[in-house]
Length: 153
Image 1 (tube, rainbow, N blue to C red):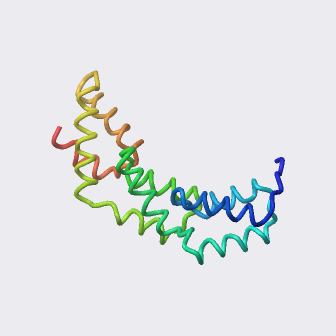
Image 2: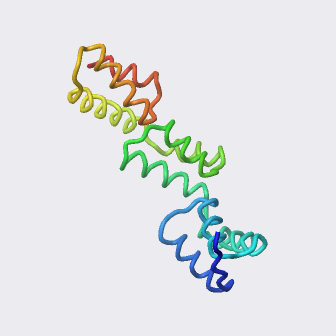
């Protein structure tokens, strides 16, 4: 990778802007700092400053990320969990983020998705049910909840 090697002050200002624009996880910020050509010791110092100054908070990130993916993309908790895990977010923060998704909204979203998708599917009833289950599993919803949601179709 070609490093730019900018100064510490400039890197700090850029990364503060990067973090204030939207919530970020630690791995995204580290990756950005490495791309600026900084050394590991410098990166650790900047990371500590960002955390102390409340620019960086992984719990806050997990809550915002989980809520956003659920509301905007209609992702289920399993898909959100794996996505956060891939970003290196701690188990504690992931659970905290998923807990912020209201159960009523979650179940309502699942039912609405199931109804809309079922109406667009073609084939026999069994084929439609299999396609629907695969679709909802791919969205990250739990198998037991999918079975309940499909009971009314």
